[in-house]
Length: 175
Image (cartoon, rainbow, N blue to C red; front, side, top):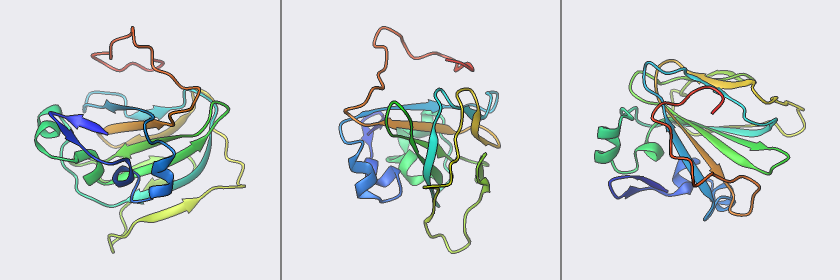
């Protein structure tokens, strides 16, 4: 996956080392949304979705501003993150909540606050069969300050980006 200024990182590293999960998104689509301290720090669902599993990956807490992203190789795969794997009518996808400076804990509506384990090990929760459904427009998670959200879609999926639409200078709820 491309980060900035020629820096890239593997999807396997981003999702916490799970090569099988990462393979689902090989050659697929991805986007990274950066949140500044002045932004709305809640992640809302664009479609109804079912969380299947969540992986907490301990890591660094580098700033995720554009200057740092240009200078720190593999930044999004090195910072602490919460990897949320979903199924929906449009197919599977992954939302990765990436921590940053002063953003060492993240929250999901089905789990609550996700904090780093003192032992520094990757932790995983499986939600298969728990019938957790997040409706369109519902909050799925949030940060304490600014950070980033990466979203991954498989190559063969119903999800598409509109190539005529440039990325917004500011992200607005509902975009």
